[in-house]
Image (cartoon, rainbow, N blue to C red):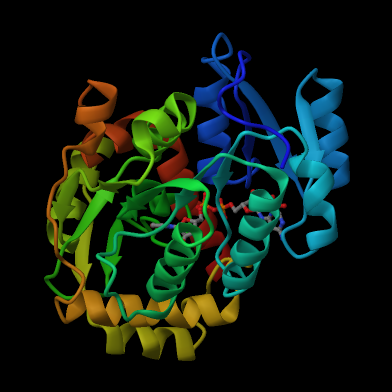
Length: 314
Ligand SMILES: NC(=O)c1ccc[n+]([C@@H]2O[C@H](COP(=O)([O-])OP(=O)(O)OC[C@H]3O[C@@H](n4cnc5c(N)ncnc54)[C@H](OP(=O)(O)O)[C@@H]3O)[C@@H](O)[C@H]2O)c1
């Protein structure tokens, strides 16, 4: 049992997924808090670790698929940002890193989960909820983050293609959350630590919009027309089966199947509890980014994602 939260030094925070969308943004926030925290980057890619070190960053090699890499990476770590990728392997990866963190004396685990209420049946939602229950039983202080639908999915799984925004959940909405706000909340919880946040759960959902409403906000953000194409989960399955829609390579097959189930459950209205949350404002004391603003700020990237998708299709 190594580190503890009572000693008079800056808490050392290890960020998993430091190259990922959320992890990178969490790190960017923590970098602005250097007066009060130490930030430790991590990657499964040794070259990336070396590149960070050359930039003067503290960085460790950690591969979630290789538990033997955990003990060395966790030496002297006080707080852990636990983020996993789009894979069913997240279940055993999370169990193993939580065990190792507890053994290494980590004092606080902040978990990046999903917008769930503890009773979710969609597979990847259920996996995340099992991880949460496991963390809670491990004897380390914890806080759970529950973001709804990332706005930056517009750059990956749901791009605007040829002026169209495809929505396969019928007229049902989801709660959009800006990655900037998720990262700001995550960094603040990590930096303020267990005294303030132990046992807390933070649900993040800024704009509750269905496909038609989202298309209108995206159009306003881009300053050009976007048509919301409202379809059903059956349409999505038909398009995936025909090869017209493919998942990015970073999304593993079992997780991808769960995403189809997520669309079905959203269509059935099973996932729309909670509505808009005030978490971002409550914690950070600033207003969260609305979808329109986020698109405005990321206009080039949103347009480029659609262009890439079109090029892939020809
Ligand atoms: N998209 C949404 O709307 C949404 C909503 C709610 C919750 N979530 C949750 O958000 C999480 C994904 O967050 P994200 O979008 O930030 O992910 P992401 O951009 O795909 O990043 C995943 C990160 O995990 C790292 N990683 C993958 N496998 C690893 C391994 N074996 N060892 C060490 N690191 C590994 C990746 O590193 P490499 O660079 O080496 O690949 C990358 O840094 C998932 O748990 C998902 O369920 C997503």
